[in-house]
Image (cartoon, rainbow, N blue to C red; front, side, top):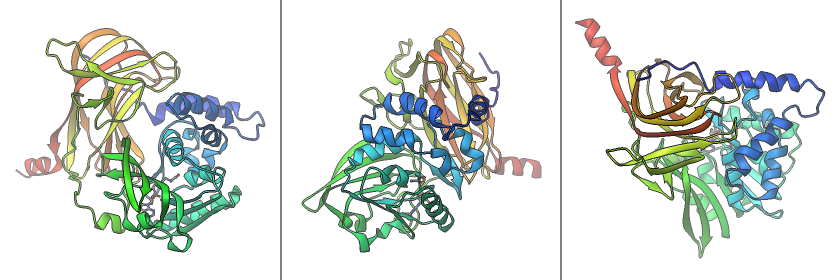
Length: 417
Ligand code: SAH
């Protein structure tokens, strides 16, 4: 059994890669990130299925690094969500591209966005449609995004601070509406403010498990088309007050760790799946597994699931899984090694800790592995990532389980005794 603790992968490791990129950026290019962004678009946006040439071009040209805090700039050309302050995040470029494509943006469209955040999604829409109206509930973010959009000259984007639940009646109706935070249900005012025949893209669901929907308005009613599982920050304000199901932060719940539930080879409950397929595990016990395969060094092969982990309640977790590897190799950057990691985030959604099982290199048969995970008190959210981390070869995983080993209360009562 391999219990070697992982080196800190994820953000820290990606750094190494990016120093190289940064060095190259001194070469007096007008946009130092253009090349890295083009590579990301090729491998993570186009390869993942986005086809609309105008959308692809927008992601390739819009300077995403201008929309993230300085400390995050070096990660801006990776296909990952990033913290932007106030507990909020900018979505990954793939998801922005995918949602934009689902809107079928037309040069004559008037589009409403709920959740301005960094302003990046609004900027992507700006060149594809006639007018963009974007609402942000957090004043600090709304003001900063407005400044960024103004500085970069996105003149057809209008922003305001407020609860997007109400929409923007003064400018309704809209041809398209995009919601980039997650309510449980579609707010009624948005239905009213969508034109007949219009399209609405919104992630609906619970705190850690949502489905991205495309709705079309036909005869005044929304016709649903569920697209894929996803993970967004919750919609605050009235949508939060109306929520029926509230999350239980004391009990991190990992769904479908045995991959028994799957549709067209994609596992239920896991999102951002890249180069991954569910199939029979071939173990004596039977059952399914998730197999990740990659042949291009540096390209993503991954699946992830977010779970509530409140470090004020939980002291220690255990992650375990059955794993098999076939010619698994490290990625091109130092420390990028196939593994199962638990990344813990603070209330600002900054990664504060990365632990897990692996690295998984070479070829080995089904083996069970486990690792204890100390939870920092500041943790509020966890993500369980099964990933080749840019490495090549094949890994298969099943029976992924996350257990609470120790709560802070248990520790407190023991020391009191
Ligand atoms: N589209 C953004 C990412 C958004 S993150 C980008 O490209 O960067 C989701 C945003 O929705 C956060 O900034 C959050 O503050 C905002 N939000 C949450 N609830 C909201 C509400 N009720 N009305 C408007 N914005 C909201």
